[in-house]
Image 1 (cartoon, rainbow, N blue to C red):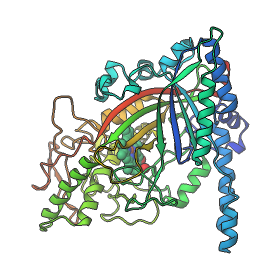
Image 2 (image 1 turned 180 degrees about the vertical axis):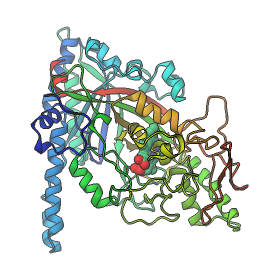
Image 3 (image 1 turned 90 degrees about the vertical axis):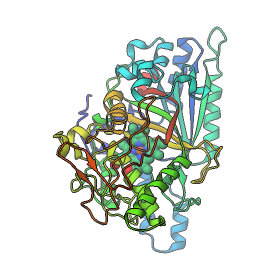
Image 4 (image 1 turned 180 degrees about the horizontal axis):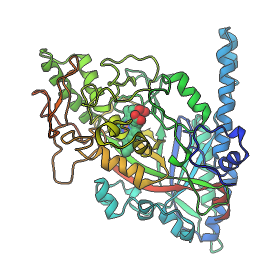
Length: 515
Ligand code: HEM
């Protein structure tokens, strides 16, 4: 039965058609799988289409987690957690925590356009233009300003047909699931050729670290520049929206809810209830030393601006918040100029800060989600910019430290889910983050994720003065920015390098069973 993809705040328990659709859609799209450990297996098929099709069906039957299974498990866990929260006796609470249902293994399986073609299934694949081209296509490399494929890690340079994402909170269980999947790929077709090989693999880890970078199981997840990540996400389930009302400071100021159509499309190769989502996968190496150097330069200018000779730790915190848009603990700099909110707030907009005095217009989170800024500045209604949102499902790679050694490779295994690669991921990366004149001329590039055009140096960004006085950044009539003499020459970035990438589509289980 068809479902209305424009619906928001879904409660699958209440609708048979929704239940059927979620049973024929993979997990990790409408909601993050939430496990701390993951392995990403990039598969290249070598067997004949019949044997590979049999393997896809086995994966759907044995391993792949559906959106419905993921949702039901999360409800069971939330109910158990609520019981635990209500228990006052600490010893009884500790006992009860041990009976909370474990997340268990989680598996996603997504195919690249090259994968559909290798399986002889090109007539059943979805048709996003960038998905069909793939990340290695010269036009995509040029559009995203990505390095030449020869500069990528060797494992990404050849054709990658499928991404199998396996996640678990328990590292041993994770290894067992990965071993079972690898063994199944070694099975052979009628000519004795293996079904496929793992051409490349990545290990992802959710870094639960305190403010000083020490491991702490109850800490929120951070990325390698030291910032709490994963706070702002489009929300689809009524239960997640209720949770955001409770935990993220409400949703009356900024509404994180989103229609299913933001991330789901009808799977053209699936059954009547089958839905899928495009995945943009990018291994982004983070240059932590360059980040710290940029933050120090901004902090020193803030100090000079305030009449101090040396930057204080508070200046450093503010400088980092100017680059990201949030302090390391998640406090939005548009809301206050010091860290310290106790919840992870997401209920804010930039409405009172059109000139970027509190939060620079180039700050990462302001570039990638203007939260209605486009309405005031460009006349584009809120719905227009909200439709560009992506569901971020990435995870860090490399040593779990905020102070990596120079030889350490650290960064983000970026993964976004969306209904259109062109209109969402690529638009965000290219037309917002990577466009120095969004939202106004002279704003500059997003310091976190953007590259200047090849052969050019990045222009200085429009940093506000220390916002103790809110009127010190001025956009003149023609749109140019007038800023502090100390800050006007500072340019930060690029801070990340693409080490490999591919576009995938996570098809419906009914497609996998009939491939
Ligand atoms: C938010 C870091 C790459 C899109 C954030 C946040 C941090 C962060 C610290 C704030 C936490 C939150 O609001 O959830 C990084 C780092 C990256 C990276 C270190 C690279 C290594 C990207 C890329 C994109 C992107 C490539 C898309 C093109 C977003 C979006 C948000 C976000 C949409 C939420 C903004 C909001 O709704 O306010 N990122 N990010 N990020 N990032 Fe990134």
